[in-house]
Amino acid sequence: MPEIKARTVVVTGSTSGIGLGIARAFAAEGANVVINGFGKADEIEVIRRKLEEEGATTALYHPADMTKPDEIGNLIATASDKFGGVDVLINNAGIQHVAKIEEFPPEKWDQLIAILLSSAFHTMRHAIPLMKAKGKGRIINVASAHGLVASPFKSAYVAAKHGIMGLTKTAALELAQSGITVNAICPGFVLTPLVEKQIPDQAREKGISEAQVKDEVMLRLQATKEFVGIEEVAAAALYLASDAARSVTGTHISVDGGWTAQ
Ligand code: NAD
Image (cartoon, rainbow, N blue to C red; front, side):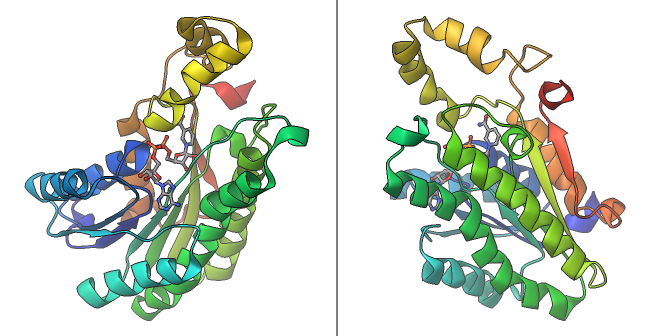
């Protein structure tokens, strides 16, 4: 997809997991990649340098906390100042918290909604004018199968992911005649730190082995009985960012091993 070369791509939550996989895919296409997320400074610098070794024209790290609207504004402004705009915005940062609604800590609810949903509103409100000025752009929201269906004990996550599906469709309609597309990717279970952290907790809570958590809980609805690969999600992002996808807007691509077909 040579048309990605020299484009500027901002990926929130890209120091790990799916976001890092997406950043690597765009780096390999020669883009300017702005990464974001938490982690140790020296480890992030290793990641940043590796992205340039793998093909990024420039890789830049910005530490914006996705719960802080001012810092989010600064992330987009920094990308724009450095590279003259934002061509592809990928809202990906995420965390999880699993508890019954009546036991769900209200501050966790607020944090999940802020990171998984409100941060995308804030990145978009700053990036859209930049994209409009260029007459083109791509916004890709990493949602989830949980943007389409629910699971118990994940109220904030499921609510935020359903919310971002609505935001995706609304933005797509608002921007339909501006050369800007807005879409979501809905992955099933991908073995990233976010998921790996849940395995021992769920094993303890359910009184089963970690292998059983993987097979009987996580992959129960994933018809392929396999975890989704990070590179499969990244490939969907590359497609949505390409010129070939210019008429694909206001929709989602499920990469979920058949989960939501049931
Ligand atoms: P991960 O834990 O590997 O990565 C999450 C990233 O978000 C990290 O870089 C982390 O530092 C960053 N982050 C967390 N809080 C942040 C904050 N306040 N500000 C800025 N960055 C922050 O998780 P992942 O599995 O790669 O998840 C990435 C996205 O994919 C999330 O939106 C998640 O909901 C979604 N998703 C994951 C799966 C899965 O099975 N792993 C499935 C469907 C959707």
